[in-house]
Length: 265
Image (tube, rainbow, N blue to C red; front, side, top):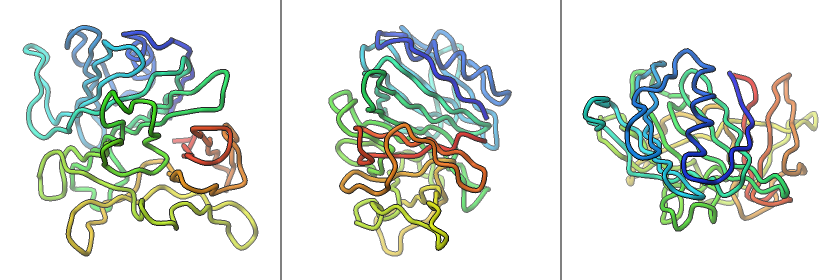
C-alpha cells in the first residue's frame, strides 16, 4: 500500500502528473497508453483482475474517468466491458492518492479549508472472487464535479456515478449503490461495547429487484453519507482501531459529508 500527497494545482494535466508518480509505487500498476489524447493517459492494473483506467485530464478543476476491460494502445481505443464516463474533482490544489494492488482512492483536498472530495476506482472486496467487480465511484458530470462528495455515500444518481464495469452476469456498465445509502442508518457511526469506534468497509449492491444483489465491500473505504453528524471526529483526524489507521475526510469542517480511507494496505 502506498499513498502520496502532492500539490500540483487544478490546471489541465495536473492529475495525471500525480498518477504517474503514484502508479509507479505498485508493481501491479503501469502507464499503458501515454498518448491516449490531449492530457490523457490509460493506466493498466494487472492485479486480481486486469483492467484499464482512462483519465482525460484536459480540463481545469475536473478530470474524466472511464474503466475498460481491454485497451488497444496502438489505436488508443477501449473495448469490452466498460463504465460510463465519470468525473474526478480537482478543484483544490492538494491531492492524496491511496493505491494498492487492485484499486486507488483519490482525494482532492483543500489546503486552506478542511473540504475534501473523494473517488474510488478499481476492484472491490468481492463476495464472489470469480467475478469482474471493478467499480468507479465518481462525480456524474462536470456540472457536479465539486458539488457532491461521491465517497460520502451517494449511490449512482444525477450527481454521483457509481458504476460496475461488469456485474456478476457479465453485463457492462451497471449502476451500483452503498447498502442503505438512502436510509438513516448509514448516517450513524457505530461504537463497540468498549467505547471504541467501529470502522468498517462500505457494503455494495446492485439491481432493481428485491432482494438486491450484494456484491462485496469498498476496499478500505467507509462512506458516512451527508445528512447527519455521524461521528465525534472532525475532518483530517486519524482514527486508529485495532492498530489500523483510518483518515477521515469531509466536505466541510464538521463530520458531515464524510468518508474514511484505510491508510494501510
